[in-house]
Amino acid sequence: MKLLFPPFKDNIERHGLILPGDTVVLGFSGGKDSVAAAVLLQELRRFLPFRLVAAYFNHRLRPDAAAEEEWARAFCSGRGIELETGGRDVRRFREENRLNLEHAASISRYDFFHSLARRLAPAGSGPVRIATAHSRSDLAETFFIKLFRGSGLQGLSAIYASKERHIVRPLLVFSSGEVLAFLERNAIAFYRDPTNLEHDFLRNRIRHDLMPAARAIEPDVEDRVFRTVLLLQDEFDHFQQETRRILERELRLGSVLPARAFAGLHPAMARHLAREYLRRVKGDLLGIGSEHVAAFLESVETGRGLSLPGVNLSFAKGWIHPDSLRVKGYRLEVTGTGRRSIPEIGAAVTVSRTGRFQPPRDNFSVVVAEGKLRFPLRLRPPKPGDKYRKIHSPYRQAVIEMVRASGVPAPLRPLRPVLENGDGRLVWACGSPLAAAFAVQDGDKGPFVRISIKP
Image (cartoon, rainbow, N blue to C red; front, side, top):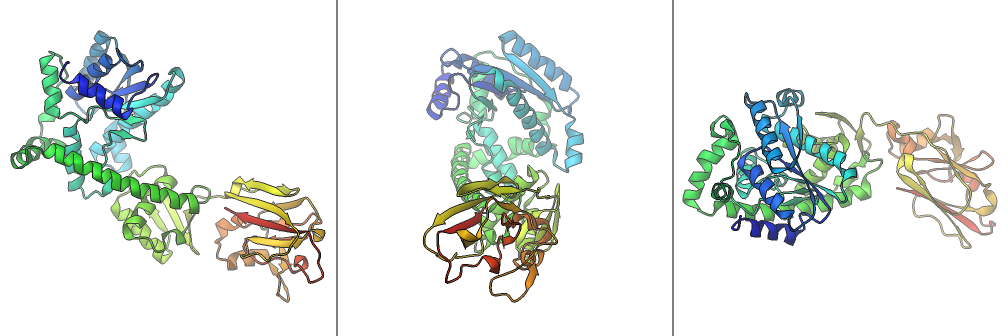
């Protein structure tokens, strides 16, 4: 305990991985890494007050699964550690989602951990953190697995010491050999998974064949891989921050994205943006690979619809959205100056009064002499019967035609509200010119009202 615990404690305190009052859900399999983590976390509770809950997940893949679960129960009971258990038929889950077995198992485990964390949240006096027992050796093995599968930055930098502050990996400072030596020195038993010796899984072949060969060439290979992963994590985080900025600026209703968001982007940035958009629209990236991201970007160029695992997308008139999108109806009364949100379309209307006439810069704002308006004004989606004569036009035109001409596909027409005067006349269709009847004339006196509708 004396050799391993001080750096374990120092790493947690230095990086704030666990704070006083937290609840820590420890992924516990009974293997050497999770047993070491459980013992070290128990020791840490002497210095730092937090709740420790072990979480065992039964994958139902091996004949000894029941025996392993019973071993985990006995270990936790003997040490006075809270234990929560769960399970899933991972083979069926794999087939239903067309995943490789390791990915299906990982998703299943984390589904259980997150569900448990949500359930325990009200009971704890602080945040709930999920702790996994990944060692530096696990990180190196995962790096090579992802490398062989042709992963990008996200895959190659998949194991973080702390991910979004709620998933922590306090054993990353140790190698698998150091963990094993710690358990042997302290005569601490752990459950030996017989499949760890088999060569049927890629991870085991990397562990038993590749890593010894790599150590013969570079004894510090795990540390070198760890440093490389830290660099890749910084690169990935940079792309993620840029992607979030673009989506915050461009995304409407959580799923409507103008194709212009991809204009001029470096191919690497475009891939990150496409992947993050798909994750938000679909809810996850299950079944989404690099070939799907490439197909998405091709559809951005061609404007053709696209069917991907779990989501069908439309690319029309410069807009990207799921086929399932339905924009809700709305009716908003504008009683005076100020700003009001229109949550149904992810936009806001701003009304201000000015004594001097200044023409608007685009068709998303209008300026009208206050004397021509009758409050309350009303904002609503365009209807088939809506018509008015635009400024500089000799005839009345259907609003639906105006919206279509402005490049908005049919499912997204509610995103362009119609402004109705208090006397029932149409003032303006957002994105199109103002109605001629409300245009400012030379003889019109102020004050004037400026009305803008922007995301």
